[in-house]
Length: 178
Image 1 (cartoon, rainbow, N blue to C red):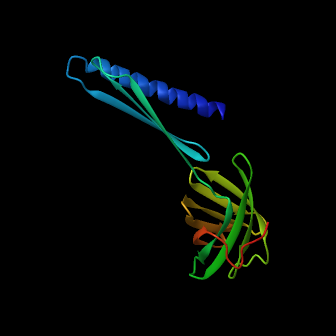
Image 2: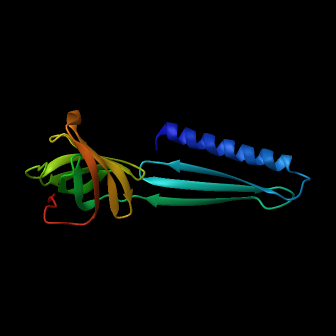
């Protein structure tokens, strides 16, 4: 894990616990109140959420709950894209994992911007945000993943055209083969 990320996480936890302890001492003698601090940390492929509660007045200790959600993008995806002047085409890509937070893939599109066959793509994943770049054709797709669905915007190099796209997990007749 990145050293700066670890330092940042530790700083957030220390500040959160310090604030909870301070509030606990301020509320001492004013009833039995609880103070909660929630810290959310987003990493490249997962979201971790921790909740720490400290009770005052001879109450309980602390409770830590950890939840981890991983976004899986590997496999075939397909959908449609719409140009700035309303034309619609189809796209398909196949993504495979090459290492920790590292992916490769192939893209195929139909008219109006037909690739003429599979082209290599670069993939960046940050949480549920994805960027797919096809350098050889100058196209970039950016968007979000929600389960087995993706959507977002796309653009061609030098602002030649842009539009929206959406898709879902699965294969179609134009899915590229690895």
